[in-house]
Length: 148
Image (cartoon, rainbow, N blue to C red; front, top):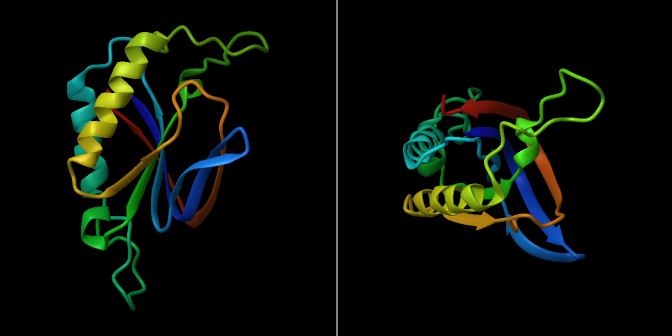
């Protein structure tokens, strides 16, 4: 699994000009499922994200004091299979490392379910839909996480 995590002030997702998910302060997770990814990969990344100290304590200069649980932020999960796009050859990305749509949908749902078990507010994009994602990156803080 591969995730691009962005700390945000706010974010939302639209499908067909309709807002389907929206959060205030927290993180946007662009989530890609690769071939062979398992529940163990999802659990590892959920645990990592919940423990990452990327939020400020009120009135502090440092931004690495609180994790999202302690901070009380929200999570927006968006499926993003293109994170497995291989651009090393030619001019058209290859997605041979991406999981099949069927496998990816199951793992995406599992990841979201595990994230919701944290008690945080978790919103989601629409799997396999053409989405417009708008966000205000805070910091900016952008991290790349992988399960392998």
